[in-house]
Length: 478
Ligand code: NDP
Picture 1 (tube, protein in one colour):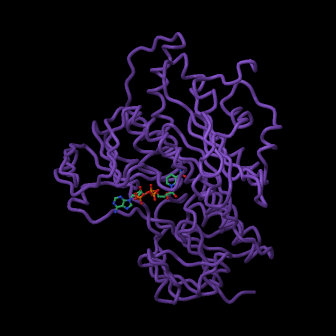
Picture 2 (picture 1 turned 90 degrees about the vertical axis):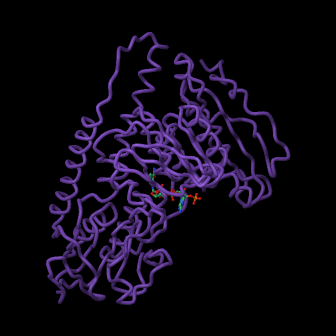
Picture 3 (picture 1 turned 180 degrees about the horizontal axis):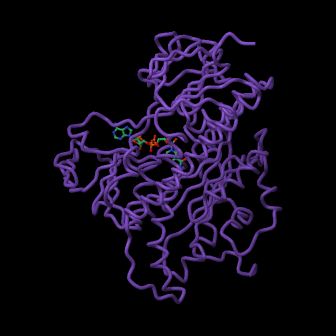
C-alpha cells in the first residue's frame, strides 16, 4: 500500500521516460507521466526518426544521377517538399500514437500537459493539480542552444526545421556537430545550395581525425560549401531573404539559417534547484551511476543528465532505473563502448576509441582501408569509403584487442552495429581475421585488413592498403 497518488511520476514522454514508465508499470508500479508536447520526444517527433526519413529522401538525387552508369535513363525529376513533409508528419503521428498506446496498455496514466517538480514527492501540473509520488523521474531531454548574436531570432533550430514551409534555395547551417553535418547533407541532397559555417578547422570534433577529414572532403566533393575557422557575426533581413554576416567580413545570402550549435539539458523552470536537486553548470541534472539525484526520491535519465546524449542510451538508462527501483534488480546503465552513427552523407559508424584516444592509452596498431565502393565504379563516382580498426599493441595487458572501429560510407550505421557486438565482447584483431569475409561486400574489409598502416606514434607508417586504389582489394575472392 502506498500513501502516494503514484509510485512513480515521470516528467517527459520521450525515449527514456516512456521506457522507464512502461517497465515500472509492468513491474507493478502505479505510474503517471506528463508530456507537454508530443509523445515520443525529440527522437520521434523532431530528431532521429524524421531526420532519417529526410536522409532517405535526400539520397535519391544521387541515386538518380548514378543510375545512368547502370544502364538506366532517368527522365526529368522533381522534388516536392510539401509532399515529403506531409508523409513525414503522417509517420510521426502514427509513431506518436504507438508511444501513447504503449503507455496506456501498460497501465500508465498519461497527462498531456506541462509538469514541474513541487517537492521531493510531488509534481504540479499546468492545470494546477498537485500529485504525490514516491519516486519522480525527470526525463525532459534537451533544448537547442543558440548563441546570442544579433539577428538570432531570424535563425531556426532543429526544433523548427522539419516543418518549414518550403525548401530554401540557399541554406546557411551553423555548427560542425551531428545535426549541422546531417542537415548539410539533407539540404544538399534535396537540391538546396548549402553553406556550413564551423568555428574550427575540421567538422565533427570528438570523432576520429581520419573520419572527420574524410567526411569533410567528401561533403565538399558533393558540393557543400564548408567554411572553416569562421563564425557568424549577425543575421539581417526578413523571412526567406536573409543575409548572414561572417566575422571575416564575408556575407552569404540565404533563404534559411539553421543553427545547430548544441543542445542544453531541459531543466529551466522545472523547480529542481529549488528543492535541492544538484544541477551541473549547463543545467544538467547531476546523477550517480543509478541515475539518482542528490534528492533520493528523484531520478533523472536521458539528455537532461548530459551523459551520452543518444536515444538508445536514454532507453537503457530508463530500463536500468525501472529494474533498480521496481524490479528488485539493481542495474547501472552501461555507457562503455556505445556505438553511434552520424547520418551525414557519406554516413559514419563508430565504436570505441578514436586514434588519438587509443594512442594516449598505450602502443597501438592502426589498420585502415580507403577504397571506392563497388557501386561507385559504374556510377563514375570518385567518392571513397574508409574503414579503420585500432588495435592494442604488444606489451599492453589488453594486447591485440580491438579498441575502436570507424567506418565512413554507405551502410556504415548498419555495419557498426554488428562490429560493436564483437568490440563489446572484447574481440581481438585475430578474431576479426579468422572470420571469413562475406563477398562481395564493403564490410569484408573489416576482416581482411592484414597489414597495419602504422603502429605507436606513426613511426612505422606504411603505405595504405592496396585497396586504396579501388575495389576490389582481393580480386581472387571473386
Ligand atoms: P553537437 O554538440 O554535436 O555540435 C555542436 C556544434 O556547434 C559544434 O560543432 C560546436 O563547435 C558548435 N558550437 C557550439 N557553440 C557554438 C557557438 N557559440 N558558436 C558557434 N558554434 C558553436 O550538437 P548538435 O546540436 O549537433 O547535436 C546535439 C546532440 O544531439 C549531439 O551531441 C548528439 O548527442 C545528439 N544527436 C545525435 C545524432 C545521431 O546519433 N546521429 C544526430 C543528431 C543529434 P565545437 O566543436 O567548437 O564545440
